[in-house]
Length: 339
Picture 1 (cartoon, helix red, strand yellow):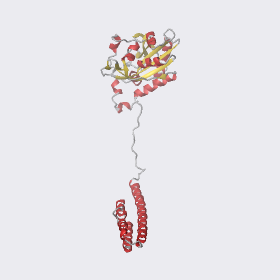
Picture 2 (cartoon, rainbow, N blue to C red):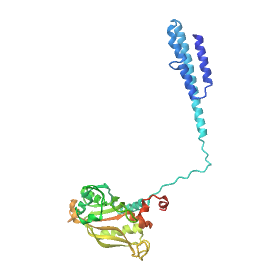
Picture 3 (cartoon, rainbow, N blue to C red):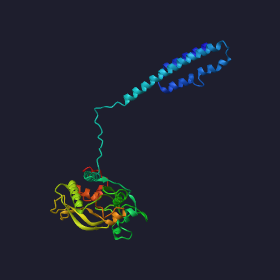
Picture 4 (cartoon, rainbow, N blue to C red):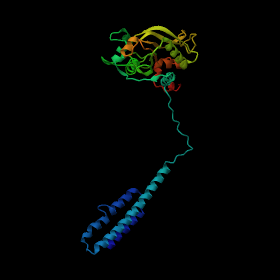
C-alpha cells in the first residue's frame, strides 16, 4: 500500500510539472482527487486494512493529497497569469494609429428654438406647466368656451379617441388645468406637442409644437400683453423687431388679435420671405374671456388676464429661413447639420 501511494504521488507530481493549460489541470485534479480518483480509491479501500495500518496509510494519503492540492493551486495561478499576459499582448493598442472620428450630436433646430423661447419667458418670471397630450374634450374645447357644435371646432379637425377623449389640438387645456388648481397670480407657459388632422405639406403637419402663455392677476391689461410680446419678439428676432396686432376672434379670449412681427429678412421693407408685406404672422393672443375665468372658479370682476400661443415650427422656419416644414421631420443629416 505504501509503495502504491508513493507511486501515485510521483505520477501526480510528474503530470503537474508538465501541465500547460487549465483543461489539462482539471483533468489531473479529477484523476487523483475526484470521487473516482486514485487517492480517493485508496481511502475507500482502507476498510480492509488492519487497525495498525489504517492511521499510517491515512496519514500518507492526506500528505500526498495536500501536496497535490498545493501543486494544483500553484499551477492554476501560473496558468491564469499566463492567460492574462497573452490576452494583454494580443490587445495591445498602437497609440500611434489614427483614431476613428465619432460624430457628435447636437440639438435639433426645433429644440434650439423651443429652448430659446423658454429662456426668454423664464427670464420674465414665467413658470413651465405641462399636461396630457391625450385630453378630455371638456378641457380641450368646452372649458375654453368652445361647446359642442361650435363653428370654431371646424377649424381644428381633431383626432378623437372616443366621443369625450381627443388628442389635444392646442396646449390651452394646460392653462385650464392650472387655473382649476391654482389661484392667481398665475404666470405660466405651456410648451408641447399638439395634433390636428391636417394634410402634410410645406406649411402643415398633423403633429406640431406650440408654446402658449397665460397671465392672470389683478389689474392685468392689454398693454401688459403688448409689452410682453414686444420683449419676446425682440429677444428672439433682434432688437430692431416691431410687432403689430390685428383684430381677430378666438372663443377663449376677448378682445383677440393676430400678432405679426416685422420681417427679419427685410426689416419691414418687403421681400420674398414676407411676400412683400413687411410683416410675418407668428402668434395669436388676447385677454382671457371672462367666461373661461368663471369656468375655472376665478372671479372675472376681481381678476383679469391675457393669453397667447405660437407655433414652434413656424418660428423655427422664420428664424432659420426654412421654406418647407417637412424638412424639420425628415431626419436628413445633411439638412440638420446646418443648424
